[in-house]
Amino acid sequence: MGPRARKFARAGLWAGLIAGAALALATVVLRLAIGAPSLQEVLSDRLLSITPGQLFDFLLERLRQFGKPLMFASLTVGLVPVGGAIGIAYGWTAARLRLRHAPLRQGMVLSVAVWLIASLAVVPLAGGGPFGVSVPGGALGFSAATFIASTVYGLVLATLHAQLAPRPQGEELASTPGSVAAVASSRRIFLKRAALWGLGLGALGSGVWAIVTRGSRIQPSHVDTRDEGVMPPEVTPNDRFYVISKNIVDPEVDASRWSLKVEGLVERPFTLAYEELKALPSVEQYVTLECISNPVGGELISNALWKGVPLGRLMERSGLKPGVKKLVFHAWDSYSDSIPVERALRPEVIVTYQMNGEPLPHKHGFPARLIAPGLYGVKNVKWLTRIEAVDHDYRGFWQEQGWSDTAEIKTTSQLIVTPEWGKVYTSPALLGGVAFAGDRGVSRVEVSTDGGNTWHEARLKPALSPFTWVLWTKEWLPPPGEHLVVVRAADGQGHFQSEAWRPTFPDGAEGYQKRLVIIQERPEQAG
Ligand SMILES: Nc1nc2c(c(=O)[nH]1)N[C@H]1C(S)=C(S)[C@@H](COP(=O)(O)O)O[C@H]1N2
Ligand SMILES: [Mo]
Image (tube, rainbow, N blue to C red; front, top):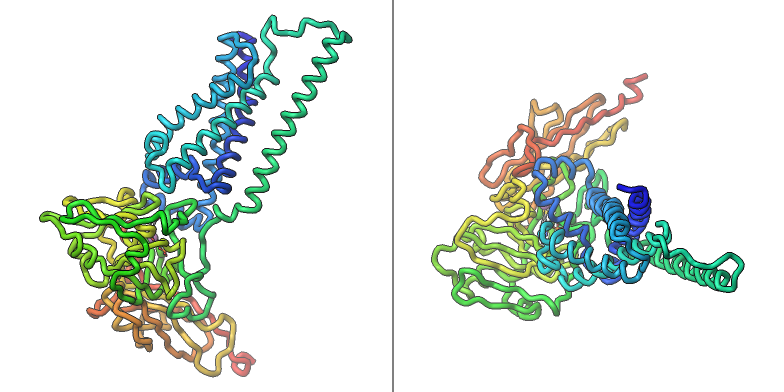
C-alpha cells in the first residue's frame, strides 16, 4: 500500500468509526422513535438460538435482568468497529481509484451498497430473510430503518473522509493567499464546516434526548415478584407477575391489526379477529405459571386467573386431518413452540385474552396467548398469531438449544418465610411458602428444622384450582442456636419431589430448598 493509500485508509478508519457510532445511535433512535426493529434484535435472536442451552442458562443465572440490555448494548457498540472496517475499505478504494472528493454522491453510493449488503447478506444470515421480510413486528419498518441508518452511515463517512484525507493532486485550489477568490472560498469552507458541525451536534443531541426520554422501552422487563420474607399473595397482581421472553424489546401488538389463524393439517382452516375470539364461549380458571429456568426457591413463578377459549373448541371448528402429531404455536415475535396433539386438546388448555379480569397486558402476550396447565412457561406462547397442525415432531425456539420438549412441571416447594436471624422467640414463629406440582396438584408439604432428620406436616391452604400452587404454613417455636430448615412437597399422586440437586437446564431444577436460621440465646440463659 502506497503512502497515499495508507493516509486515505487511515482517514477512512477514523471517519468509519465515527460514522459507525452515528449508525449505532441511529438504530437506537429509530427503535425508540418509530418502533422499527433494529439489526441488533435480529442478531440477538440469532445468537440466542445458536447459544447452547447450558451456556445460556449459566449466563442467565449470572446476568439475570441485565443480560438483555447487555446483549443490546454490546451489539450496538459492536457496530462501531464494523463501521471502522468498512471505512478502511472505502478510503483505500478512494485512493486506488483516485476519486475526487464528492462526499454527497460517494456517500449515497456507499449508503446503498451498505444497505444492500445488510439486506441481502447480513440480515438473511441472521435469520431475518432478504430485506428483513421475516423480521418480527414489521419488515417494512425494519427495511426503512436499515436504509435510513445506512444513509446516515454513508453520508457521515464520505463527508468526514473528504475532510480528513489529503486532497487528490490537481484538486488543490489554484489561488494564492489573500486573493479575493481565496477569501471567498475560505468563507465557503468555514460555512460548510459550521453547517456540518451544526448538523452533527443537532443529530447527536436529539439522539441522546430520544434515549433519555424513551430509553425505558429497551429496559429489562424485570419484575420484583415478591417482597422479601412475606408470604406472596395467592393470586399475583398483574404488575408483580414474572416476565420472561427472548426479546430485547417486547412486541406491543395493535389488536385491530392482529388475527389468529388456525391452519396446517386441518379440514377447515380459519382466521379469528380479536373481537371474534372474545365473542366465543369462554372459560375462566386459575393457573400457576413457572419458567423452566426457575431455580429451586426462585421467583419466576406466579399465579393468575385466566379467561379464554378452550383450544379444543377451536380445533373442533377446524377439524384435524389424519396423522396430526403436534400443534405448533407461532407468535408475533417469531417465537414458536409445540405440544403433542392429545396433550394440547385437554380441556384446560386455553387461548386466553384476559388476566385477572383485565385485558392481557402487553408483556404477558396481548392480544392472546396460550395457557397450558402443567407445562413450563416455554410452552405458554405469548402474542399468539397462528396455530398449525403438523404431522412431525416440531422443535421450538428453546428446544433448538437443547431445552426439554415435554417440559412437564416438576414438583417443587419454596421456603419464603422463616424466623429472623438473631431474634429471640418466646412464642411460635411462622414458617411458610408455596408448593407447586403443575397439573398434578400438591397433596402434602413437610418441613424439617433439623436438616431433614425429622419431618412435620405443614398446613395447606386449599388450591384455587387443580393447576395452581398452594400456600403452606407451619408454626414453630425456634430454640436458640442454628437450625437448617428444609421443605419438601408431594404431588397429587403422593410422589415427593426429588431431593438430589439438579440445574434448570435442560428440563427444570430439582432439589430441596434449605435455609440456615440462627436464633439468639435468651437473655436469662445467656446471662
Ligand atoms: N411469543 C413468546 N412467547 C413466550 C416467550 C417468548 O419469548 N415469546 N417466552 C416463554 C417463556 S420462556 C416463559 S417462562 C413464559 C413467561 O410468561 P410471562 O412473561 O407471562 O410470565 O412465556 C413464554 N412464552
Ligand atoms: Mo421460561
